[in-house]
Amino acid sequence: MKKILSGNSLKVLAVASMTVDHVGAVLFPSQIWMRCVGRLAFVIYAFLIAEGYFHTHNVKKYMGRLGFLAIVSEIPFDLVFHHTFVYWGSQNVFFTLFLGLVGLYLMDRIKMRLQPQFWFCALIPVAAMCLAAGLLQCDYRYYGILVITLFYMARDYRWAAFGGIAVIQVWMGWIQSFGIAALIPIALYNGKKGNGGKLLQWIFYFYYPVHLLIIYGIWRYAG
Image (cartoon, rainbow, N blue to C red; front, side, top):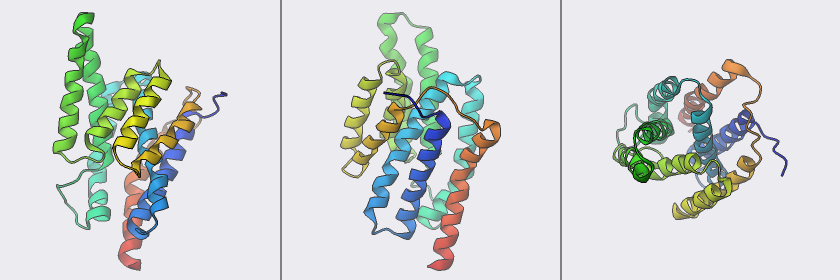
């Protein structure tokens, strides 16, 4: 199978899927097909977090960017999905991505200090991040952390990872099972970042809170 998609190509696909999902959820709630299309987004983002962890030159800055975007995006997220500036019962997906990345970092740090027979202990921070995602009510909760971790742990065994991801998607429910389709473009990933540089990187980051504000504005003034 020819690998034709760069990391930026996957991001474009994830952004498009996410946008269809959010527009459907807020403006066209009866259009279930839009929610199904949206299930591709998180699986792709989870894969890109695992890949980004391998390729980043500074993982702490990477975590900082995700944490910053999680905070910046929370008010737009609460406005769109809960119609209030602050809602503590649900947190946006950037918190999930942030916790997933922290879990990978801590897992590696612990693994470096252990003998191979004790490497299973390195899963403790992953369990802690799953618990944190559940307590904070982050999008996708512990499922999201598991998907990120599985992409990381089975990076050299891609088809094994795909099998595990497929099981998790089905486990999450019939709509989320459409996320299995995201494995097709991921299988076409060529390992390259793609063109665009830092500017495109920040456009991808800030698209999330900006598009939420736009959707909220449309809902507010057209509804």
